[in-house]
Length: 119
Image (cartoon, rainbow, N blue to C red):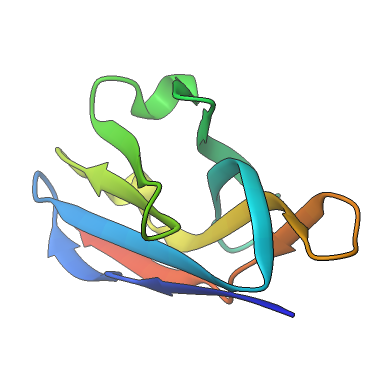
């Protein structure tokens, strides 16, 4: 069994910063990729950032403002969000593609954390 626990969401004014964290725990053999998604009301879930094998990628709307990083020893992924805009308001979800003992790799999801950016 795997748990992905997110933290760091909250309310911030436009132009401010937040750092999200997500820690994976359980009988994990290997984590291949970790991702942050977000979903605003009435919209589809959107991939925001990914880190895999040390390489990172971002959706265009957050490039230059968000930074994804990972602590391999702690099975933790971070999303540093700077210069936040009201349109960044959403529930942010952490996801990890990982392999457990005696299983094949698959995606696991956190419960989500709310980020609200006020104008």
